[in-house]
Amino acid sequence: MIQIDLSGKIAVVTGGTGELGRVMVRTLARSGADVAIHYHANSEQADSLLNEVQEMGVRAMKVQADITEKESVFAMRDAIKGTLGSPHIIVSNAVIQYPWSSVLEQSIDDYESQFRSCVLQNVLMAKAFAPDMIKEKYGRIIAINSECSMQNLPGQSAYVSGKRGMDGVLRVLAREIGEHHITVNQVAPGWTISDKERNYKPLIPRRNPYAKSVPLRRRGEDQEIAHTVVFLASDLAGFITGAYIPVCGGNVMPAI
Image 1 (cartoon, rainbow, N blue to C red):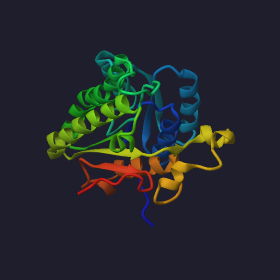
Image 2: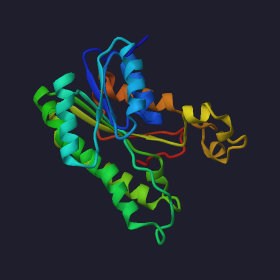
Image 3: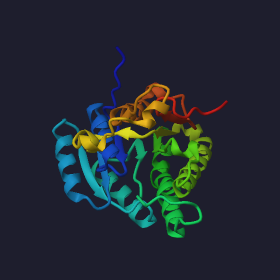
Image 4: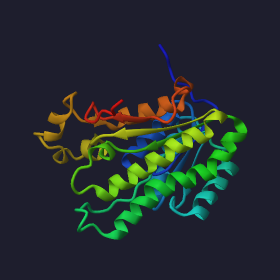
């Protein structure tokens, strides 16, 4: 049986205290990686997750930052390097929530927020952490995209524009730094079941039209997203870069 061992690797997960972020942090730690847990405002959740991860026997820390501001991201980098060392694995997962509306009604501020959280986050994370990866001739950059970026559904224009923008940045980055043995990939979940739904079952509709539209006839689980991230972080995925990988049961299928 093939097992993924990330012992000796250092990972940072932005949005690490979120629903999906927590699962990715735990899965990276269970695979042996030391983990820096980024949070923006939820310090209490970060403390709880930090204690949980440290009990797994790996090194861990929490770090606060605004992932849309250069000075904050670079201060986060310095804090991580000073405590754990230079990260080998970057998982850009943080998001800014906003109410969805039509193009004609959506606030311009929402388009700007999605640009900052999707595009600028990935630019700043690359600027902060890729130089040390280049020196080490090794790195894994993984970003969380979405199936929405391929669907172009009504009401999603700000979100889709941000996710498509990050897709362009990351594909270019993959070409620019690939010679240094650094991979750059995206994981694109569909509508994923998280602990929030498991712990409050009325949130899960009995009849789910979304699941009926998915070829595999179900919604994905957050752990399935985390498994994909850990795979991309491992040496098993060392020859995969520039990829946009849907993890949505076939609900979207990139064309060739």
